[in-house]
Image (cartoon, rainbow, N blue to C red):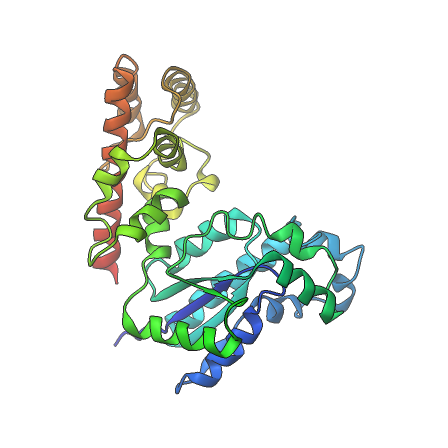
Length: 330
């Protein structure tokens, strides 16, 4: 008998935005036990010497430039949260997502789970004052994080701790979680992140967030259309650089490919992007990469607007196919 997964509430915001207090308040409000698996819990697992400079620079740098040990640790945190939830635990975790790759990884790990992505916002001047008043934070962290922490994120719900207490924010989150189901991580996974487009989907989402996806993709500004196309990896991209879903769709788990095919794909990708100004995206539908290379070559002579529209329609077709597979696997 399968285990019903637990709910995840991931709180994202700058330092001194009130995330830790909200997490504690949420634990108090919920009748069942919620595990706090936030960022500080994992940072304090490190040997003490890594919490001071110079080694701290290799962990989280100045908090806006994580080093390799920090990236490895945060990846472990994301996988641990997913594992806890898959075993039936409810989890609340606060995060400071200064690396866009962290958003993409969480989307991949949490897309099939009841995982809520919550933005914790606060006016900059309030967060800076809190940072100074606390006395246990490096002054300047907040200002470095402020322009980047929400940049790649797309939220199911947001709270502003400049206008509400931690308890009020936790109550609002509790009520939102009880009233529906999350879509942000799921949509980010379906569309290879593409935050601007996913924000548009969530703003118009009804029962089916994908219902108007094609219409939105075809009518939004061209800059956002190109961002949506370019969010997908190249055909034949380095396997380690692609998402799990793209890895399967491009057949890396079924065919090894050859150096000759890779060289051809690299050349075709370069020619296509130089001609059209965006990446080649196609609904692969199980076709081998050699066949896709033949198709790409044919599309090099297409009209730009026609090709852009075809690519956008295929982006939505890919997402619908992914959604169907995720539903059948859950």
